[in-house]
Image (cartoon, rainbow, N blue to C red; front, top):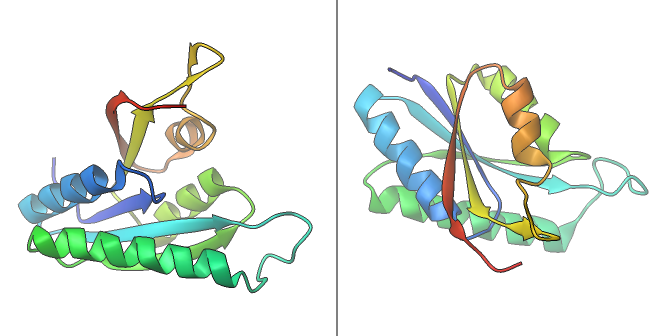
Length: 143
């Protein structure tokens, strides 16, 4: 399968490295563009465009790290910072806006109250994505 635009959301978690590496590998095969996005979730008590300096600094560090991972794979990625109320819908909207052919997500195995849990973002993206989605499922992590 050939992809022209790949969206790779990152979260600052361990799995970001594997997500970026997989997105770059797939992009090289198709000569695709990779856009790495990080979403800051803004509390409802604040305006959506609120100045969130500590969160923005953290996001910029995460995106810079993503760029360095891609450079290590000899690939150049574009990065975007999103401010949103809900991360899942922001990822889907970004995929639509960019015309993405593929979304690459990463998740570590988690248990919540003894049950397997994907959280809220991944199920939302899987249900609503306008394109193919690859979920990179990595081994168990601590709660």
